[in-house]
Image (cartoon, rainbow, N blue to C red; front, side, top):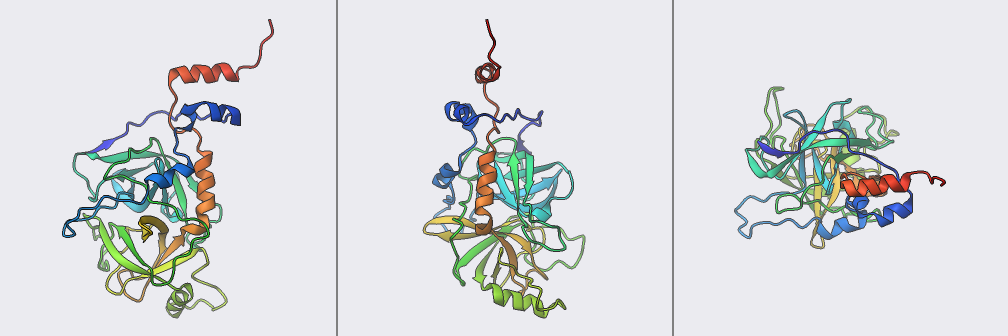
Length: 311
């Protein structure tokens, strides 16, 4: 069994004046936005390329023991996935630190419940996938290790050139699934992909549909990537599109939709993370309290927040 975080009552959440936030370190236990890039996007990989690589930001989003989607760790207790992966008010958890869909008993594998889910306000649902991105706040921050590490977020103005080599990962099948009873891959799959021009991507899918030309299929907040050999299939929704830029890996997108996966002429369409970097930053910065303070600090907070009393 994976090392799990015990479920407990909802942590105390207090909105404090700015002067208190600046003076109390226990309030700032959530990694601030500006500290994340210092420990992101630099995975440890064996020098022997014949050995399997691991993708330390890869997350398996679960309902109970069932894998429902992929995701990417972007901060010590924040995960980004696709908004369409979230269905109703189910209790979600994430597994990190393993390449196995059903991980064995291991101290390096983490199972952490999801504390809060933040859907992007532009998301309208599966009928028109715009704003297909969601943030998951974990109950506890992860401990950075060789097997668990966040991926870097790109700057909002950064643009990947067409033809840039990237990688997609997930537990979906590499071959098209013909049966509803088909199982997901037991080991994390990876596939090399290349960034495609959005107009060309739109043309490919438009030929396969009867939607009028005036209605765009591939929007500006999307990014396409394709592979001339293989791609990943369902089960990878919300999974990362990772690209190496100047020695660091950045999260270019999360898988939003595709048709007839594992086909050369059906590129994957991803939510373009650069379009949502500012929103993500704002949500993370708003997550002031995520780790309970010590009793001494709580007593101090209680005293500071009390109204002044006369003699």
